[in-house]
Amino acid sequence: MQTLTVDMPQSLRAQLQEYQNEQGIAQPADAIIAALQTYFETWSPATPRAPLPAMYDAEEGPCEVIPSFLESSAPAQTPK
Image (cartoon, rainbow, N blue to C red; front, top):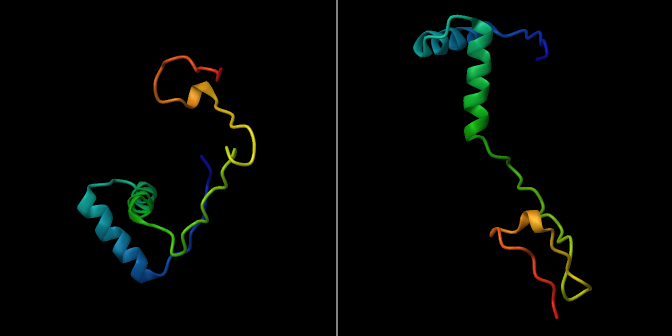
């Protein structure tokens, strides 16, 4: 774990204290971690990420399949 020093305005400190009391968290550092974790679980980016490019395109060339990514546990079959 890393150490981070945070300077908070009094209004934010008061909100953190209220959150800490509501959640029954003893340590202020634990309350900060819990508040950030809760925030990031509901947060989504304002601009969506670009879709990932296809690694292999069947129309452009051979399509390669890695067996570990197959949904079924059946062995990969090679075309005849």
